[in-house]
Image 1: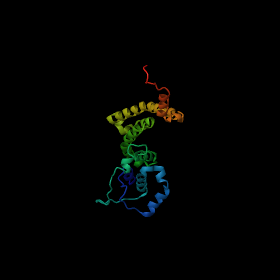
Image 2: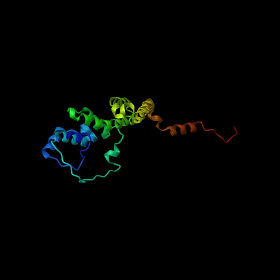
Image 3: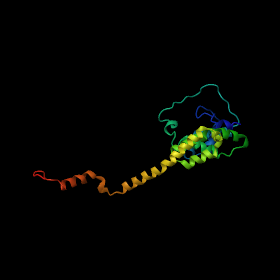
Image 4: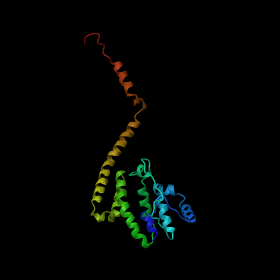
Length: 204
């Protein structure tokens, strides 16, 4: 089925040509692409275009190129809480697919789930990371993959760091609550030193 092409990301983000009426129908259906799917809107569009199409043709040739830079989305949002992978995972996981496309979903989730767990761990989202890891154990060969235990260690470290972050936040709140008069500590110190200056003109 053509829908598999979109799910396993064989549909290009750029360099494609499609029926204009079909494209407009999908775009109108998803007016809120940016708000709903953020960085993965191109994946969502490509998948839905494949779901709605009857056939596709491939050219055995390069028809476009793109350049990755330090400010590219793939670099600037990588590993963050707004990474495109998180949006793709949510979209694929929530799709209502016909039975023939379920194997394609599983292939996609096998690739996405470990990355999503890693991103959650990096962002101290422990419960979300554990939920994804345990829900998609097939992505880690049902516990036979060393990658699973590495990610579990990452989640454990994130869980241990959470109380420390809370303590730092509390300390910051206390400091912020100190009266503004203390914002000039050196002025107070100088005043005290002036008041208690010892006259060294005579022996002590």
